[in-house]
Length: 51
Image (cartoon, rainbow, N blue to C red; front, side, top):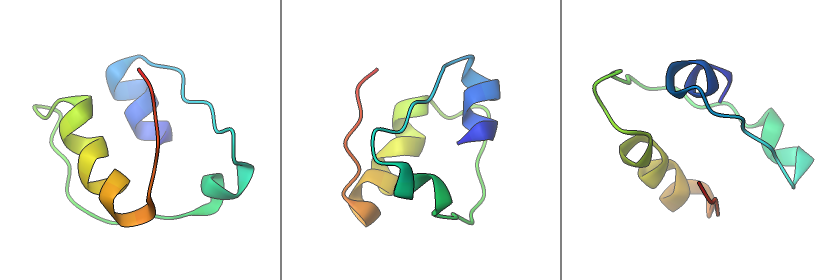
C-alpha cells in the first residue's frame, strides 16, 4: 500500500490496523488504474475502500 500511495499520490488510511500487516506479492504495472489493482485485493481479503 505504501507503493500504491506513492504511485497514485493518494493517502491510504486503515480503519482496521490489522490489515496493515497483510503482505501481498504480485506484479503490478503503473499503467494499471488504482481500481484495477484494488479489485483483486478486495476479492481476496474482503477489503472495503472508498476513493
